[in-house]
Length: 548
Image (spheres, helix red, strand yellow):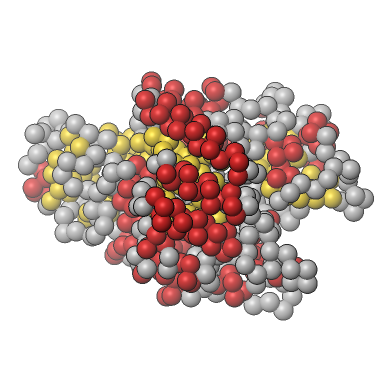
């Protein structure tokens, strides 16, 4: 057949290995030939579009195995603070957002803890004194709110501290405007949910942004009401029905923290109904997402040993569900044919989840492939359990670098043992990669750079935060736990595609033509230069959707 588009003058990474091929031809949404430039040019005629890779890598499109794309898009269309490199730039963006919006509530997010130690309600009151403001941090586990938002939520000095969260108080004993984890939900629950139109617009905005990064599919990590945000499933169903969602996607039905053991059967029955209804509309929601614990930054990750700054009182964080509930949840969802997508940051949370999956395998046998995301603290023996239990390591590679703030909370030894990707891979675990966007940037090449090098370049204009007095900069043993470029690139392409889309992510004849072309060939660059790569061209089902 005559190819509609050919890509020449590159080097092909097929999803698992670097090949000797230099060109790819596509037609009718599929790959029709892979080989030399000369062989691929044989499929072209005068109507064929020719893409010159200019020596760049031709590879399967990236698939993000952990993203919150709809609300990332909504944020990009509201008050998006991710570009700010100073406190003043952050405040200026908030002021500009307030001036252009007449919304009842001003919402958005992306402010950086590297700029603000503890932002205050007074800073927001000076900009917006008469309307409620609620802004998520970049990690989306904290809300920064003004006085009007606290007032409408009924949060004051008499409000009890919630389980697994914290209302920060100022020196006078009043809420400071900084709400962590479940405390953020006290305000989140009174924020009007986004409309279906806003979520639909956010979905399409996100898809277009992801194309600029070579991402041709993703897994939406929460479907359901979460922290004041409405269920974004209707946006997917609408975009699938009208054909504007060109990427292949899947999603995870949300298990809210606090679920009780006796309520598990009803939840599973509801999820089965939702799965079938969504599948009939063309949307795969055969995954269930649960946050087993919180995050080290908020001291809500569940640890086996106390936090370093709580060693005197033995505080180890808490699970979001009791262990019996975790076991029953895993057992029953596994039996019903769901894949489990588990957020876990602490080593105790990891062990509890692994024990539950092991128990489910003993009862149900091998079923869907479960995946655990984040992996910031995993004991070596537990890291080696992933392979035998058939659990995919869902890697957020950008996080696998030294973090001076976390050092103060868990100590250098535990931080340096974090993100044990090599141990998992050597133990036979399948690997996938994702970003957790908008918690962190969605750029796969940036994440691959950190996964390979185990250090993160700072964004322009951002200086490293000062270390505590007498402390030395932490370093990671990159040679010990880093992945090779081949492993990382395979995880972000074929590994993620197999995990969340249920098909290979390969460049070979007959496969769907989801392809990206990089601006250079990383296999010909020093490892420290991986961060310089960008996406030059992106194809989705053979259609060129982005060209730099």
